Amino acid sequence: MSTADFHSAHPEPAKNGLTKISWSASTDRAVSIRVRSHTCGCVPTSYELCEAAGLAFIRRTVRSSTGTHVSESPWMRRAAADKLWTALLEGWAR
Image 1 (tube, rainbow, N blue to C red):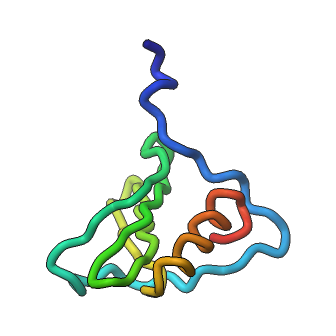
Image 2 (image 1 turned 180 degrees about the vertical axis):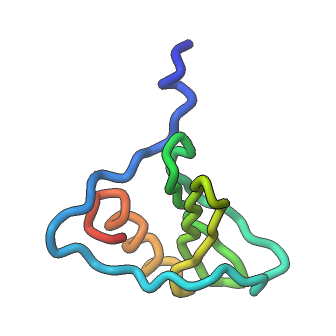
Image 3 (image 1 turned 30 degrees about the vertical axis):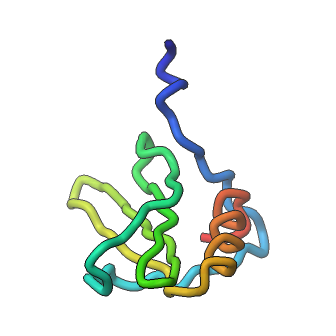
């Protein structure tokens, strides 16, 4: 088994004309949050597609020498979050 077997998806590089995601500070909005999908944690910025309380959002984690910063996209209906998640993975949203 190679180390490649342990990696998750890596978002494609950002493309011209991408959609800017309005990131805000992470809050304790729900008691339980389910992570439906995630990108690889081998890079400083990783993402998780999350679901809670009937809504979905993307969680962004940025790790640096000054610490870890977690932020969230707006909470939205699952279909809209799935579309935004696909755009993020394809480089059309950040």
